[in-house]
Length: 134
Image 1 (spheres, helix red, strand yellow):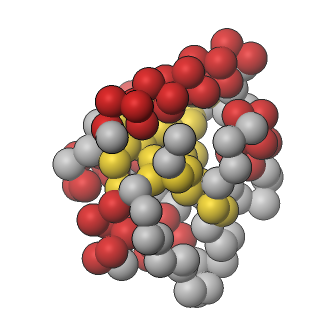
Image 2 (image 1 turned 60 degrees about the vertical axis):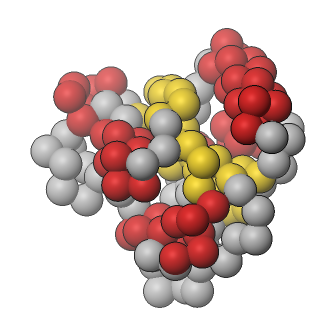
C-alpha cells in the first residue's frame, strides 16, 4: 500500500482514526507556520472539516500550506474526509473542496472518530485503491 498523509488538530480525532487503520502515515504539523513535509511518493490525504458549514475555513490552514507545495499537489491521489453531521451541508466539506481543487476522488467520509465499520471500510478501500492505481 502506498502513502497516507493526515492532518489532526490537538483534539486528536483524525490521529486516533489513522492509528486504528494500522497503516502508518505522515502527520502534518498542527501549527500552520511550521514547514510542511514534501512528499516523494503518491498519497491519500485524510483531513477533518473545520467551521460551521458555510465553507469559510473548512480546510485547515496546515493542509492548505501543505498543498501549496507543488510536489505535494502532484502526488495526491485521493481524499478521505472527517466531519460532523451537525454541520449539515458542511459535513466533510473540506474533503469536497480539496477533491475539486486537486482533481482527485473523494474516497470516503466519516464522522468524528469514525466507527469500527469506517475503519474496516477505509482499510479495505485503500488496499483496493492502491492495487488498482499501480
